[in-house]
Length: 443
Image (cartoon, rainbow, N blue to C red; front, side, top):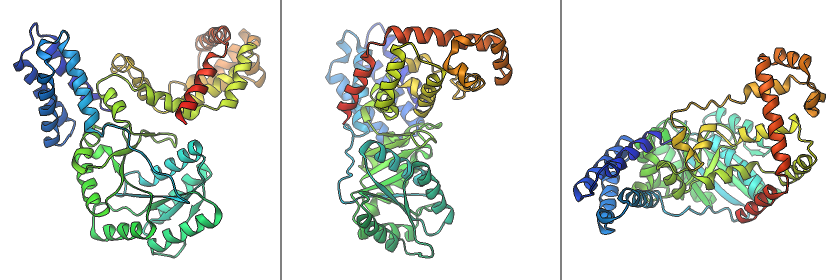
């Protein structure tokens, strides 16, 4: 995500770093290169020009030319303006109401139905909501079936009406059903089209007028660049939605949609989809995204993803085992599963300040844990619980069973032993206290 833009911006700032003397001329040259980088990232041309004009005005106004470290001051100004360009503050998300009603809109193929399931899972888990999903795509039976499959994965009910082709009636009846059965959150998945058309606009507007949603979200595929911005504008002109959801930000996207939508449509980005997993959804933080674009990481989002996987009761049990030096391969396997749920490994690493640039040319495979898992799964239950009993004969059997070599098995056992010793030494409870404090702050 944003890799090309980050690299181009970094090269632009080197124009200042390499100069012995900073002048208005090379400040202008730097910003000209920044503008090119933004346009190549598919940012709207007017947005890119306004952005660089504002940065130039502020840079000269803050006397970058006479600053001790002009390139650093320039980076700060660009960071602040990128943050403002994407909305400034994190936009609020309203889930008050009895029930709260969220209306999803967007074109077919934007990831709208998948995001509906992801959002239901997140609000159920983190806000203790009782969601009811509503299938209002009456034109594609596959869409209704897809919603039901997703809902089954997260243990959430779906309201649908076989044979009813009136989405307004279905949505209205669903809300009545939610009130009757005590669901405090209704998420309505509507029909999409391959392109904006009048029938779709009339239908989604009629649904909105009938159910009076607390939040109306427009879901758009970030990989479509400026087409995403144009589609968002067309929808907003008719629907006046509350916020944007950008999906597929983990793909080979140039970032133009994320940087242009707020300026062109004047509506905030509220959520981003960052992968195929049901956990791959983050609230949109303009400052954090600016950090990542400039290669500074995004530690807040990293901690947020950690907390999504954090279970305090399980952590207490694990802490006791570590303190008694009883941490075993079952626990190790459980920790690997939690890390994998957090998302794409390279994306995660890039959130840690200073790491993104260091690993930009390194291919981090999401299958990196496969050989480790294969080795652990090839152990007997007793071997997983008591790694110390794994002798030479057992290592040979484990290597054969996992399709690895004895050297790989030995390496894992050595690393596990070292990890267990370090964890035992550090088992004073500091990590637990830290995670509890972070969880309280997040609430």
